[in-house]
Figure (cartoon, rainbow, N blue to C red):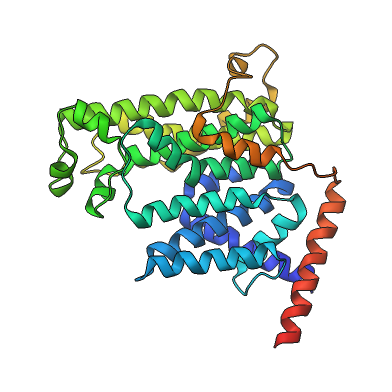
Length: 341
């Protein structure tokens, strides 16, 4: 029964991922099954949490409910939500640090507040919470706890978030939100408040979007350096995610940088070509330029995430041992829910 519940919950999480993020879903197909399952569970919780806030008429209450749900997950008593049950298994099997999920929810809280970001470093801080955390959690389920590898994983997440911001400038503005660095807007001659009241695309805004994409590209290069530190069978999937997401920025630049009037989408055929290209990531030779920033200090915004993910001194477990722990947890959850029925 426990195994059936486990499989059913993961399948529901997989459908959620497929419907919610085609880029992430496509890249995840390159991950080995032992990592794809917990990665799917992590994505499902992140997506459900984000939707719970966006769809709520009272987002502050939704935030409080998410914190209560996370308390229950870490107490080993997840509620009826399938994403919570799946997350509880990952927490138990991999010792996923609570700090990472608390940081994720803090980023969502900043959205609820309508927070704006003065400098690129402030945008890094936001990206660290809503996306760098995902990079750190992915590294944990790949059982990669080296500080350099964790730093690069978090930076890759931040790069992806910068791409999202560049792509969604118009969509965010129509929701009353602005994530571009206010300092950069002023330097381009744009008054943030006036622009937000009547968002238009022009050469000045294009220069800001281009600048943000250049920063994303810098972090993609840094993030790629961490790929070689991952288990060999995980490298193609992470490289695929990097390539597919970076391509959104390349396509936006090729279309003139107008993300106010248009939403850039990477064609499915192009995504599949990039995924195929990523398969060589498992064959990176020693001395490849991919390793050029190895040992570089992490972005200040992600330092606390690296500390949290690297600080768990957990005994190594075999795949069999982790699977037994996951199935045992589901059995105990099932017994508890039956006793309450």
